[in-house]
Length: 260
Image 1: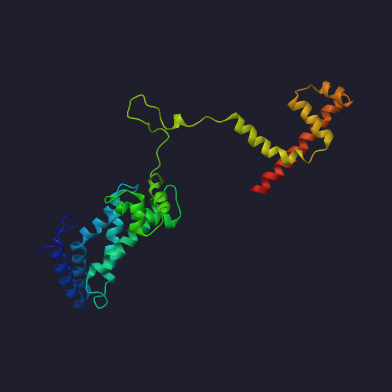
Image 2 (image 1 turned 90 degrees about the vertical axis):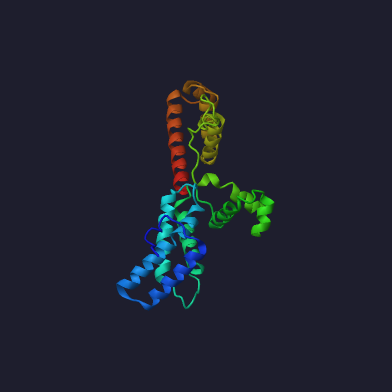
């Protein structure tokens, strides 16, 4: 049988099994270059198996060519490590080996946003069964997990290839982009963030210092007006304001370094 043309040609399952068994039997009795040649033929005969495993992870953010390359390399390792005394059927050993390598590669390189490993593995099982059903309760029963876990896994599709903010939300030529629908920076939110940062620092000021800050930055009084209110000159108000601002900056810097 000519196996040199089998890299891109699938063999019937029974033919592949018989040929693989024959080649491995001969390889077990050979050594050197002859053994290497026979193992190369084992690999060629079973490339369709490696491609089939890789194809289960297609269209999920990693080029299929990369996945097939990983699967082929795993097939090569399986062929060279296979011990016929421990397993009669080569694929009983090779398929889990190839699948494990592809899943590992996919887990390490396929997630732009990386969820917990248990969710990654469940998502792969959910995708595998998606041709049969997409109902969360049915999938949960089949996989023996909670329905909420299945729903979480079903929501992970965007973690492989997140949508661009420039992506249109409809097919119309003038459709808005995803980014157009995002809210603008909220001024009230910015003010809330500022208050959260300033509140602890303001508590370190004296009652008089807080009064000066309120009169200047809340009631918007001039330094002269503040001086008249608290009984000091405009020059003294200016010095007091500078002192208070230095104190506040120091407190804010200390809080920032504590968080870092």
